[in-house]
Amino acid sequence: MDQVTGYMDTFIEMAIAYAPKIVLAIVVLLIGLWIIGGIVKMVGKAMERAGLDKDIQPFLKSMLGVLLKVMLLLSVAGIVGIETTSFVAVIAAAGFAIGMALQGSLGNFASGVMILLFKPYRVGDLVDVQGQIGHVEEIQIFNTLLASPDNKKVIIPNSVATSGIITNLSALEHLRVDLNIGIAGDEDFDKAKKVIEDALKSTPKVLSNPAPLVAIERFEPYYVVLAVRPYAKTADYWDVYFKSYENVKAALVKNGIRGPQPSTVVTLNK
Image 1 (tube, helix red, strand yellow):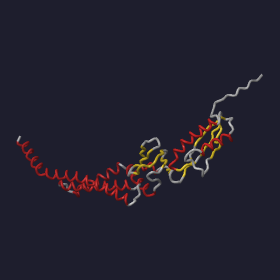
Image 2 (image 1 turned 60 degrees about the vertical axis):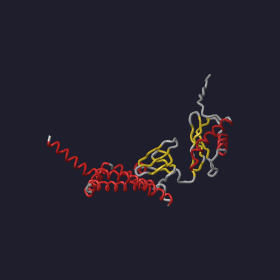
Image 3 (image 1 turned 30 degrees about the horizontal axis):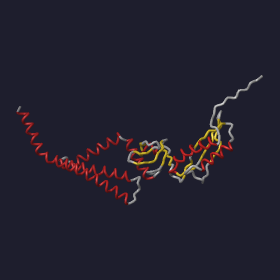
Image 4 (image 1 turned 90 degrees about the horizontal axis):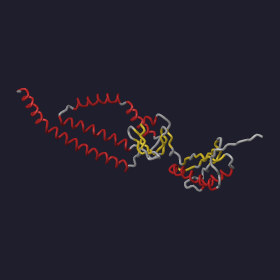
């Protein structure tokens, strides 16, 4: 019983001795996090006013936030009474262990730096990354965020993005819009070509230079596949894509040009 009482007295003494330091450390931690948030926001606005590249702004803000938080934790540890030199050594050892365990994440980090330096794409570009098409919303430390045409957020690790072919659809002024139209095999190609060309000319945002191309791509058993290739500005790609199909379909129907229709030829021998 006396031993338990002794433990209780020791605990109370330690609580009384460390309570002010712990309370002060908590207050400093909360206020420090609030100040860090304000500093990061201020730096972000300063970077915007300075015209710093939008691609690198989130990266720099994230790095600044992490650095300030590490410094804050070291300060809080010193207030509590933890030897900061030992604390730094522990952090270094833990960092080494975590780094070994997170080699993939470090690879994503290195790839993120490469993307920001060499700029294969920028925020706002329409890109095809590993088969994923979308506009670049943000280039983060570890990932690239895309907004797909069907309004989905696609998260691509930076190391995956840089390890394959990247197609930047926004790099040039205009894009070719690839469409395939099928017509019945016995239809007059020259007539169909003229109808499709006129439909494309009346389609908003289709460029006249380069001129649209209409040609035979291949023959199928019951129909002919036409390659229809209008051109559009990068920002108008999807508008031209869908509106061209719509206008071409209406024009073909209006002019009595039939689409693919299965047919069978029967020969009767007397």
